[in-house]
Length: 441
Figure (cartoon, helix red, strand yellow):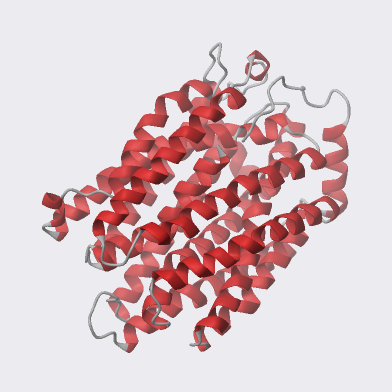
């Protein structure tokens, strides 16, 4: 399931904005509006989905029925993102309506599938050794998703070739469908999972989350990570075409080189997670990206640009790796204090907060469009468009990551001796049930 979750999201983040603005000529303000509505809708349905799944009791577990019911809507809606009918492409308003509708359906189904799967991670894996190993395996699947979404895609999808986007949409949906079907036996959790769920009301769960300082800080950290990564990934097609003057082949070759390096990055981050505090890894990943991003404003040579893009991507990849481990520690803290398994609630509220990253991205796009200018599809590119691309690629992620480093260093408490003592308590015999099913991938 890790392949589907990462593949669909990465390709959307890397391509959707470019597809609708540059290829279909949807005004940036319209696209920003659609993404804003999408983010608000997602922020509403994520915590509710987590709440309902935690209260579900069936012979197949809490989450399995929701996942099954959402697979087909997920595949169909994702394909339709890349296949708007010509009648809807005829006017900007029609295309806007189409985009909003398919995004809302996609997000709801994606929430139930991915949230249901992700919530199993802290339930089934309780030690740092297990969690680091499983995260490493998930990184392998994320690596395969990277290959499909960012390396293979530019070999099929061509600039100014609208049908090629539709073709690859069918390809990526087919891969996702097969992966989800093959993952179903592994994510089915047995009756043990039902016994420790929370029966508290949604309002009570909301109050408990608000009182959990570690979780509140984590939410801000994860928001920053997803905002920085989303900005970075979505601007790469504009950056290579407008700023560097390169075609899609450059993008494919860049991600191909990144793919060759990724296995070493996975080994590095997994190994580091076994000997260092997650907050240390968070700082290392952030500082790598912080060091590289300013150079992308300056350089114009494609080779140097690729080097600094790679360094920034390496750092952001470390952040994406470690956020799940941070959240698992927060959930363990809640379990030790409450005696209840509330993974769905935590992941639901986490999903709610992450969606604000998408909303902030849409506001950033609206800001640069209104006050600086952003028209990458124009024949004559002005300095305003170039400045807007650089702001979104470098400056916005840079400032947000600096805030994240300060936040994790000065405000986040679940680290050091406190975290070590918690992990020892969690690992103690009888602390958490051993589940029969341990298939997350």
